[in-house]
Length: 149
Ligand SMILES: [Zn+2]
Image (cartoon, rainbow, N blue to C red):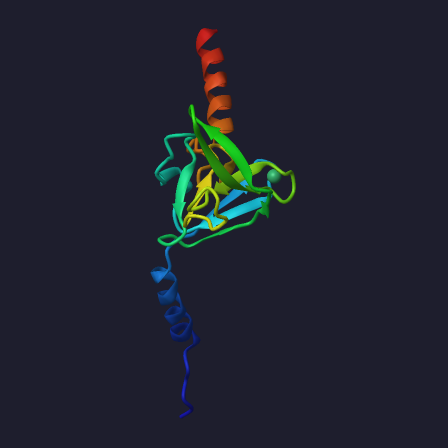
């Protein structure tokens, strides 16, 4: 009798490695250009008090930012303090997406954090959840009009 090798058995064994991988979240610029892929949802990240930018740790998180580096910028923060920023822009429409700040103001070595500008990215997974600012505002406006009539 010839040996029967079942193909079904081979294909089911392929499913195991997929379960161990954490799900990745993809984010786009408002122009539709791919901007960020990350192992954490940007909506769940802690926010910076100064400008509500989401704080993404370069050491603790796995991510890839698709952006163009701009020239270093000096920004005024409060009465007498300044902050140097290394800004990242969308490669298609030039929208400001994210930035890093240096360890020391006179230094060009950035801190291991990426700050994502509030409302700059649209998450693929946030669709229908009111995740992006534009979507939730538009939805709110429509609801108000319906209620008034
Ligand atoms: Zn863009």
